[in-house]
Every structure is written in C-alpha cells, then in structure tokens.
Amino acid sequence: MLPIIELQRLNGSKEQSLDYADKVLLVVNVASECGFTSQYKDLQTLYEEFHSRGLEILAFPCNQFGGQEPGTPQQIEEFCSTKFGITFPIFQKTDVNGPHTHPLFVYLKTAAPGLLGTEAIKWNFTKFLIGRDGLPVKRYASASAPASISADIQKLL
Image (tube, rainbow, N blue to C red; front, side, top):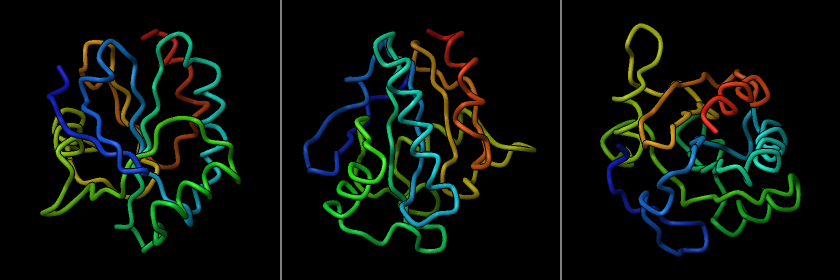
C-alpha cells in the first residue's frame, strides 16, 4: 500500500498520497527542456482517455538531469498548460535521486527497481504505474512512449 506522503502542487496547495487512494496512478518525473518533453502530449491523451475510469497522472518536475527544468513553478505551469494543455496534477520540483529524494520516489524506486535491480532513476520521464491497491506494478524507462503503457493501464482499471 502506498505510504502516506505529503505532496505539494505547483500552486503551493498541499495534498497527501492518500488523496489518490483507489486510483490507478502513473507517476512521472518530468522536465520542460528534455528531449522527451513531447511525451507530455501523449500523457495528456492517456489522462483524457482513462481519467473518468480512475486513472490519475501525477507529474513531478525534476531539475536533476542536465538542468532541464530550470523554471519557477509559475513558468512550469504556464509551459505545461499553454504548450500541451495539461490538466493532470503537477507538483513542486522534486529530487528523485540523492540525499534529498522525495519520499514518494524513495518508495517507488525501492518497490519497483529498474534493470538489474538498480534503484536510481536514470533520466526524466521515468514512469511508475501503481495499482488501485497502492502497490507499484511496473517501472518504465524514459524512452517508453506513454501510448505503449495504455494496455497495462487498462488491465488495472
């Protein structure tokens, strides 16, 4: 089960992981200036297709990979809404590796390690799929297109 973890949206409002209980979650570390940034479009498509059936996409901007998320919360929100029409939740900039790793990513990396059991996240747009029971089902590499995850999401809905 997903531990109770405090989350903070770009606008500063606070939530808890518990607010997403009984939902299928796709948690993604994102960046506005990454080669994979175009995945925002496909993530929004997944959200529009499956949100009414219980999917939530949770985006966590991260500046740990090549400084590809340098903006302020307001700049990130404006970029996501004007360039990609994002309507899923976007949270405050988050560390996904290192000594200040956000507790959600500590949990996800331990529960769903990458290739050869490695826990470190290698780049932006790493994706974690979590079932309604709060347990991570699978980790997807940055290069995994959101559309390729669609069948896995449908199985959990």
